[in-house]
Length: 266
Image 1 (cartoon, helix red, strand yellow):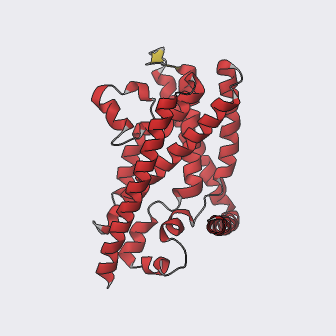
Image 2: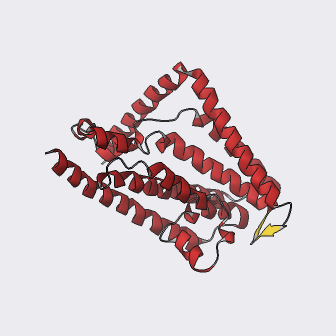
Image 3: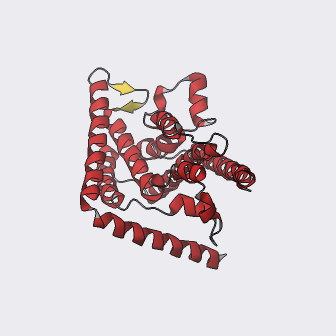
C-alpha cells in the first residue's frame, strides 16, 4: 500500500514539474490567468457589496461573514483548478477522437491519470494570497481560532474539494452515453453557481436538495461556517458521508462508461 501511494505521489510530482515548465514557457498566459482570477474575484465582491447596500444580513450571515465565505469560495476554486481544472473536460475530446485508448494502455490507474495529468501551477500564487487574506479576515472577525477548529476547517475544505471533483467528473463521464457532450461545461457552470452563495439563502426543500442530491452547498458553505460560527460535528459528518457517496458514484459511472467505450471501439 505504501509503495502504491509513493508511486502515485511521484507520478503527480512529475505531472507538476512538467506543467510548471510548460506554464513558465508562456509567462503571458501565466500573468493572464492571474488577471482573469482577479477580475472574477472583484466582480463577486462587487456583487455582494451591492446586495449589502440594501440589507444588513442574509440569514445568519452578516457582511463580514459573507466576505469570509467569498474567500473560502475563492480558495476552493483555486485549489480545484490547481489539481483538476485543466483536466475536467478533456475526457470529452479523448472519447470522441478515440485518444482514450492511449490512456487505458498505460500502467497506471486511468482515472488518476485523467484527473491529475495537468496541473495549473499559476494557482499557487492565488492560493498564497487568498489564504493569507483569509487568516486576517478570520482574526479580525473573532480573534484567534483554536487548532481543533482550524483542523476541522481543513478537513471540511478537503471534503468540499472532493465533492466538487466528483460532480465534475460525473458530468464529464456523460460523454460515454452522449457523444460529443459539448454542454458539459455549461452544466457544470450552472451547478457551480449554487456553491457560490451562502447556504442561508436556501430554504425548505431546495435547501435539502443542495445539501444532498446536488450537494453544492456542501462544497463551500460547510467549511466557511466552521470559520464563522465554529464547527458542528453533525454537519461535518454529513459532509463526509456525502463525499464518500459521490466519490463512489463517480467511480461507478466511470467504470460503466468505460465498458461502453470498450464495446464501441472493439
